[in-house]
Amino acid sequence: MFNTGKLGYEIQIEGTLVITDRRIVIYGSGSREYRLKKILDVITDLESNTIEITVSGRKNPIYLTSKFPMIIAARLEKIIDQKVK
Image (cartoon, rainbow, N blue to C red):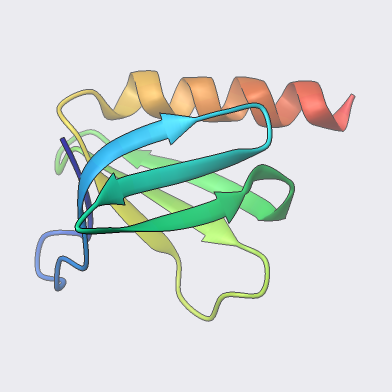
């Protein structure tokens, strides 16, 4: 279960996170999709179990909450690094 929101922020969608080689998608009561080539930075906060994703063309970053933020952030970074090479 993933939330696009950080503690103290409004949760916009709760659902399942899918990571492919081209995008991340959050499915729930609606969906959100972000292309990996537009991701500029991924920051993990283990204290609050959040991942901050900075996306090109967005004013504000995306915040995901998860029980396993390091695993998700590491997989995102690995896919992004492979695409750059």
